[in-house]
Length: 90
Image (cartoon, rainbow, N blue to C red; front, side, top):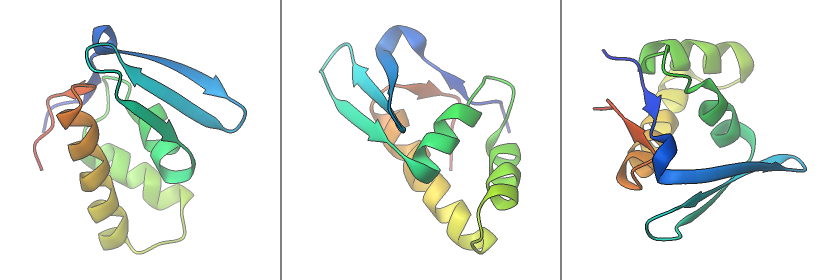
């Protein structure tokens, strides 16, 4: 699978306290990320694919791999739909 990359021309992001805030430039769609979502977002670096991100989540969170995989796919699907990432297929 290909590495997942952020489409940096599609959004602006900033860290606010303990969360990441992302705003879409085309539609103003707003995401506030904490916890697992924030961790996933920070792991999307253009070098890791879905499997590598899932491996890191498994190292960091005390949850079954299947649960983490499902949550990862939902999150990636949502941010792909918003146009914030590319090269993702579940």
